[in-house]
Image (cartoon, rainbow, N blue to C red; front, side):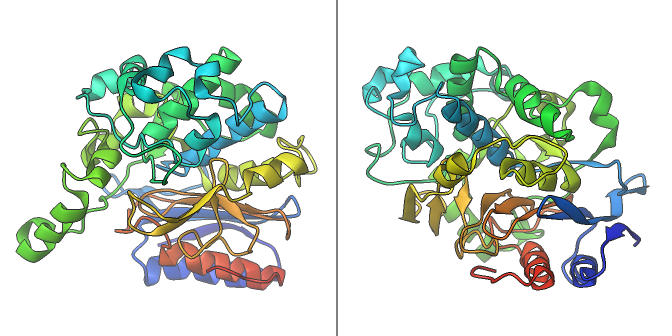
Length: 392
């Protein structure tokens, strides 16, 4: 196992933490990058990108990051709000009239971003091919009745978030989510981050290894029964994670899935771009414009809802589309925000300390947040900077 990249003096402990992820936590191929006050101080990659061919995980490798994509989608909505084109408190029907069916006419845009809309699942069966076309899911969400009274509780909209927030972005901007993100955020920042990967980049992608289901679960009757109770196909979490069965664990490596625009789950990037994305959001990059103003950053990281999550069974804390630092989302500083992805990926920013970071990997761990790999990297990063740690 080789680790390559750059580490500025004083950040050697971050490299040590990155290496431990391979020696102690089972990483196969991964990358980590850290920006401090807009300066890239750590940029590491290592391991194997494809165990079948032994292709190394190198500087050019790209990675699907699951729900870490939601941070990119949230940034688009916040940018439109900053420009005065999207009112977070306006009813969704202001921009998307068809959304108002089945008693949803009063739901404000804000609730889509903080998972209070009560739409984590759809009842209609949508085949994967239909979901990749966008419109069939939009139509299903238009007719869907909320699972709970909107605004009365929150629960993680694991996949529907991408279509809900993405359709508002499309209606307001006149561009698809992936196009808007590319033109308004990725290109100005000079990052390799796509929601809808061009075919010319497909050869660089490291395939996902494993899933949220532990190996050997099928042979372990007790474990199988426990998993069935929490993430079985008839549970809210199981339906939320698969869009009622449209997506299975094996399908995320398919070219068709990479090419689609799934704003909650199919972003493809690398650690360097993920870290630079968050540094660009908070305006610390010396060679690129700030994407969000300090005022909009504060709005994005202001708590909109917290407490028991009806889907994830944990206490979660959301701002405007982002996780707010908490025991569930341990991003270091008390004012940090960002988003994690199933299996371990993570991007975050801490405006109070000028820190931004990104971690990507191909081997999925069996957790939804608080991965020991990212905990170790965040702790080492904050220790190197000398910044106070609230959550790790």
